[in-house]
Image (cartoon, rainbow, N blue to C red; front, side):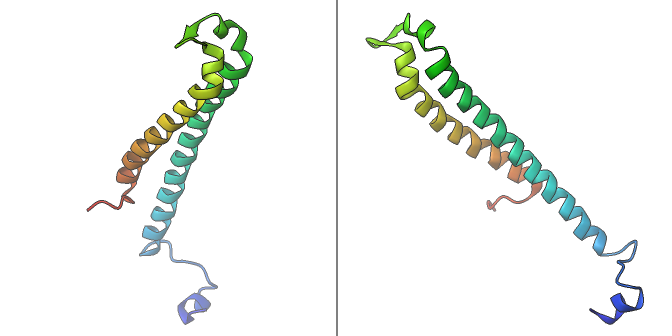
Length: 108
């Protein structure tokens, strides 16, 4: 332990350079909270499309045909995969915006 920390019982001073560290910790928590929120929303969308349209709503969707195949079959086989790929691109786009807002992007 540094001598200054021993002298005051290891407590940080109320003001000074430690405020910047605390601020960056708060910003890091906000950044990760936004990241997790975005991931949960996108996973919920994927779940609704894959489970809902591909399993729960398959009979009503099968009344509609897309390219000669029942729509329920199409969602179960192709649709959820295409939605997942679209969500990956949206996640990358949205994270770039979030990273710029928090100053952690790797662009110059």
